[in-house]
Amino acid sequence: MQSFFFEINVGMMREFSYLCRAKVMSQKNLQIQEQAQAQGQMQIQQMLPQQVLLVRLTEMPVEALQHRVELECMENPWLEASPSNSLSEEREDWQQEDSPLPGEGTGGEAVYDYRSEEDMPDFLMGASHSNNAAEYMSYDDTLSLTDRLREQMADFELTDHEKELMEYLIGSLDEDGLLKKSLAILADEAEIYQGLNTSAEELEKVLKVLQQFDPPGIGARSLQECLLIQVQRNEKLPYRDKLILLFSKYFDDFIHKRWQQLSHKLNVSLWDTEQMQKEVLRLNPRPGGTLGAKTADRTQTIQPDFLVDTDEDGTITVTLARGNQPSLVISSDADGQQDAFVRQYVERGQMFINALQQRAETMTRTMQAIVKLQKSFFQTGDETRLRPMKLDDVAEVTCYDISTISRVANSKYVETTFGTYPLKWFFTHRATQTNDGDDVTARQVMAALRRIIEQEDKQQPLSDERLTQMLQADGFNIARRTVAKYREQMGIPVARMRKK
Image 1 (cartoon, rainbow, N blue to C red):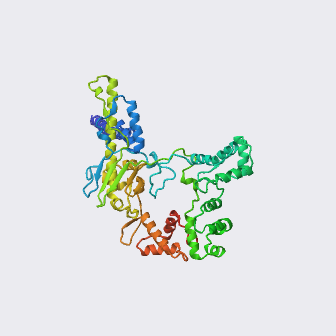
Image 2 (spheres, rainbow, N blue to C red; image 1 turned 90 degrees about the vertical axis):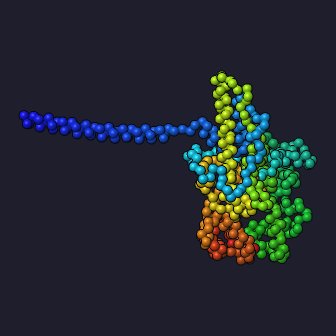
Image 3 (cartoon, rainbow, N blue to C red; image 1 turned 120 degrees about the horizontal axis):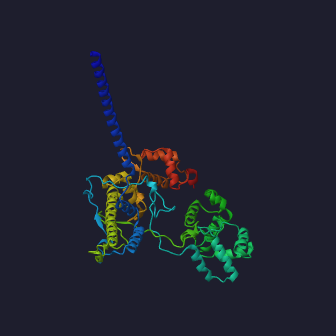
């Protein structure tokens, strides 16, 4: 009997133990399921349409935004320009003071992100733009080099056949306005591809006429011929005869900067040699560049997204440029409409108007922060006064996400009292520190380096090692290889090439 009850108790204990283990396993499985569910929700989370629209509008420069607004008005019949045009003010001013920025010190604002900055579109940035130099307003000339040269053909007496050959030669110029192919090859290609029967001798005759066109040096077949043409055409040029002799007979010495030998060969003093060098620097090795590339039908004019004015007392005013963008409102005809089709367009239009307002606020606050952080530059125009600044620094001041700052800075330009700059130009990294522990940008180091080189003895130019020592004496903690890198970036040759 006791054995029977003992077996029952053992069985109950086993069942109780099994139930406990099952309950624990069930709780663990539930936790795992909850974690998996939470992880799954994080992975499939998507931005709302309003957020996506704001992202797209924020990354657009003012010209692209204007086209986007026009397209939206065309597609939405219930969206129209406001009669008062209250939102299309040309200026939205804000004066730089020492008071906190709008929203500064408040909680952060969660904004929308790309995977990286490289994923962002770039509407205006071209291959010619530099990361370390200011981008100034392009001239408003709309004629290409080809058009300019064709206009000048009327000033010369040419037969119909010679006009065809002239057109062919103009089309064969590179973007610098130079003719890189030999006339023999051009004669063969003219017959094969254009059906023009000609010879190298005939092309030579037409080319001599082309080389009389403006700008001087156009149609040259080499740098030597380009410079020689410019000197020969300028009868009032100082040292003209000596320069013609220099380029025609001693061009190899000129290329290798053997100025001391040239002074003997040209029978001039060293002072005259220096004056000749100054005249050479005024010549244009790229004559076609003065009128734009021959393949461009239109030259692009930079339209600034911001205007920053600095008064004589140092007061800075920030303006958000709106271009020709109109103020948008929902049409009064939509009031009281119950049709689902109409309501859909009304909601879409209101969402677009709200996104434009949010974009304006985001753009303005970001530019305000940049001016606040780079206040010394905007008051003086001295690029050496730019302080190291990263996207994180602006994000901290504005309480925006770093991706939002990147979108605002990308493809945007600001017109200042001292020139027009891409917004990216103001973001500079710390290059080194001074002996006092202050951060120094690469531009400050380059400015100091250029100043030292300009003041050096041209008979005994300074080596990179000596330049490093002098910079270190001025308080810049910098290595010799960094000095060499900055010197090359500024286009300054090594010491032996700077010797005169």
